[in-house]
Structure formats: structure tokens, C-alpha cells
Length: 490
Image (cartoon, rainbow, N blue to C red; front, side):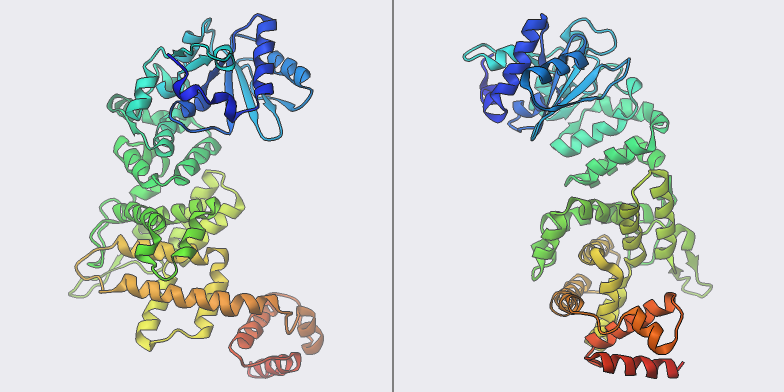
């Protein structure tokens, strides 16, 4: 076939670097092939930031030789005795070279040992760098047609070779917006228990890649159907069949999943749900870290309900879930530890779950009093911190995921109004206030009032800041007098 989708290959990458790779292969008497995600992307008009190549042997030696020819870059050995892989890192490009897999003697043999057919394609680099040459896509398993059909299909023995591929199938589906073919779905279902042999860090990495896409809900529903989700997150399944008050129409498990679904809907079209402050939601979507933690919180936000569920012993037999937010935060903490999450990520997810009812409580106050106090807005802003805007996206998605017959009318409109007010307070009052010099320091309190250092100092300083924002005090002298009166009152 002619170059077609590949004819602009040289325009995307430094020609001198590619030529060095090709020249090195010629001098060594080896063929070098472009493979993997970079080739897959080029065939569907997506340019990859990195390149993957395959050679028949001695990949690490090959990369070292290219480095010497170029006179630049760093070599990183990625493989071991069984996996001969090395990387050349240049200023804005990374190029991986791998030897053929598991005793393969030809590129075709190597390709059929890969994970999915869409990644089992190869093109001889020499054909790509030579002008006007014919380009043959080596395709032993029909991966090019699967690309055209937008299908993820497993290579033979895929999941036995690396059980993490059970999860990667969903990741590729989510990232590329492809569907998993029926036979591959059946293989995943039959072999799902193999996922229990995979290291937690590898699982966590793949799941985050799924959460970073706009199709996390679709992927988790597919994992639910295959049985993989129950093995990965058994805590979610404690909510299966757990009914809820008439505010809801789903059990706890399905409500958690639906909240993830609506989180993605709100992120995708924020102007529908937050017409006056959709730009703030766009800011959440543009921050990958915040987006991922928001989606995890959405999936886990009611995970504490089964343990907290009680039925009042009255004639109405009311169902309650008191403190399910704190219970859920504790369970999310345990999941985070199991999956080796970073402290920062864990803190953000756990905090969102612990706070996910706060917008609803504040909304009730707003409806009853027609205005939210400065103190209440200050408290939610301070406690939420960097989670403030994601918290309101979570609340909106949580509300949208509950469509029971006794759900209060107009609650989403009220949440949007509350978000407008809280965001305005945060940006127009709290941010400028925090940028000004503090009226008092901990040393002021210790020296003036003969206090000991400890948590009480922090609470007093926060109370001073609140009083300043409310307009009760404006100077250092007024702050000291205010603290004195507070301490006198006990």
C-alpha cells in the first residue's frame, strides 16, 4: 500500500533521529520496525509523543549505538534478561526499542505475542524514511481492520501472558473510544480471576488512565458485566441490593455508578448544569489530577452506606444512613492503601467523600434562611480547600443520580445557585483576605495570653480569620481584644 496515513511520518518527528536509527540498523545488518501505539496512532491520524520500535535481538546494544551516532540523549535500560528493552530519551522525544518477544524469530512471530491486535502492527522503518517508497503494514492478526472497525480484540494467549491486560482492554477502549469485541469480553469473563495476581501499583495506574478519559463510567459498567469490577473493588458490591429512601430510584451500588456517569456528563457539558459558572467546572476538567480524584470520589461517595444503614422502628420504617460519609471516607482510605495511592491523591479523594453531603446541608440552610452566612461559606471553603469546585460537581452528579418519586423539586437549580454564591465568596472575599498579612500569629497568642502551643492556637487563629472576614475586627489591636474576650468567656 502507499503511505497514505503514514506519508507525513517524517514531518512529525526529527528526520535526523529517525535516519540515525535506520542507518544503525543497516550497519548492524538488522531490520528495525515501527510498532505499537505510535504506529496505531498514525494509522488513525493521531500523533504520539513517543515512538516504539522492534529489532530481532540486542535492543539495548542497538540503542547505545544510536546514542553514540547522535551524540545526544540518555539511555535507560527498561528490560531484564527476559525482556530486552531500552529507551533513548531526547529533549522532547522518547524512543523505545525492544527485542522480539519470547523467542520469536520474525517480526510476524513477535507481533502475534503482543496484547491486542490493534497493537500488533509493524512497518519497516527503512520504508518510512525513504522517499516515494512503498509501505507495507505487517498485520498478521487483522489489526488494521480492527482499527477501522474501532474494536479492541485480544491476541492469542494475551491474558495468560500478562493478566494486567484484562484491565488494559478497558483502558484502550476508553482512551480510543473503541468497543471490546464479544469474544474478548468472554475471555475476560472466563479469566477475570487472574487479575488477583497483578501488583496493586500496576492496577492503580491502569484505572487512573481510565478515569482520565471521558468514558470511565462506560468502562466500569463493562467491568461490572465481566465480573472484573467485583474482584477489583468488592467494597462497591456491598451496596448491591441495598435499597434507599424514595429520594432514590437505584440501590447503593448502581447509584454510585450512576454518580460517576453524571460526573462525566456534567464535565462534558457544564453549561447545562452550571449555566452561570460553567467556567469553574471547565477548570476542574482541565486539571487531570483533580478530574481523576473527583471521579474516584463519585464512584466511592456512598460506599459507606451499607455499613451505616438503619431502619427506624416506626410505622413508616424510614431508612437512614447517618454518618455514611465518614464511614465511606474510612473505607476509601483502606482502598487507597491497598492500591498504594499517593498521600496527596488519597487525601483529596477521602476529603471529597467525607464532605460530599456538605453542599446539601448548606443548600437546606439556604432554603430555610434564604441566605447563607459568611461563616458557613468560610467553613466550607476552608475545609474543602482545593476540592471546593470538584465538591460542587460531585454534589450535582449525586443529585442527578437520584431520581426517586420523593426527590425535592428544583434541587439542581438550588445547588447551582449555592455554587454561584460560594464561588463568589471564595474569589471576591476569601482569596483577597488570605493574601493580606495576618492580623495575628501563633506567637502573638502565646506571648500575649501565655498560651501553650498546640491545636488550640490553630483554632483561635482560624476564629480570628473568620471574625475578620465577617467584619468584626480589622486591626491587630482589635484582634487581640477580641481573642481576650473570647478566652474570658471560656
